[in-house]
Image 1 (cartoon, one colour):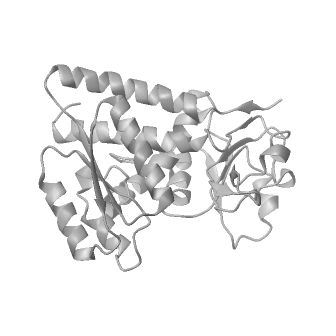
Image 2 (cartoon, rainbow, N blue to C red; image 1 turned 90 degrees about the vertical axis):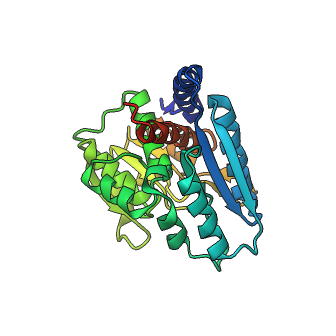
Length: 284
């Protein structure tokens, strides 16, 4: 019988911890602030930003929102980031992706100060993850590792397969599993005989962005299945990259969608922002 990996419960535990740490700082008169920039009116982005705002409120951070119109120029956006980089009362900066097509995402990510890059997207932070000597971790892969830790699921020595090679999830996920001494295979849309590879996985992480892509015949009996996907099925209902109803019968543990990895992403953002404040203020 499979067990549900409850991301809501794990995220609550992480946020409670950050809340306690933040309350201690507040007693000393110290405030933590996260600045979130959103350009345009993408509805999914607006939901994410609102959820981040709620999480900030819960843990006790100041939440600064900069909602810019779709017509904002790249120069104007870079100028705002420059200003936030220089402000001592801002500890973390996050620019919600995707950005309008006329703005270069890479230029924007690179502009955020390495010390305030709480998404861990800029090149120096990505490089640090590669060598295993990092300050911040990308929030979604870090959330996956937190779930595994919470449920005492050992990575060391396990066959781990990651489906997806994005810079935000797939690649850093691979490195984190490797740092935890897993034996990792990274696969993607061009991988041949994908099902044969995924069937060897003790831990399978799916982040390919295709609804119900992973079916029962691709999963090993007793595997741990982590579904990072967030899609809509043919009836418009939220679903992941895994066909939950068929796959759950074969695995030992599985994350649901919603309520699995999603809540963890925001919880780890809170953790990163707290860490950023500590680094900026010489607190160990």
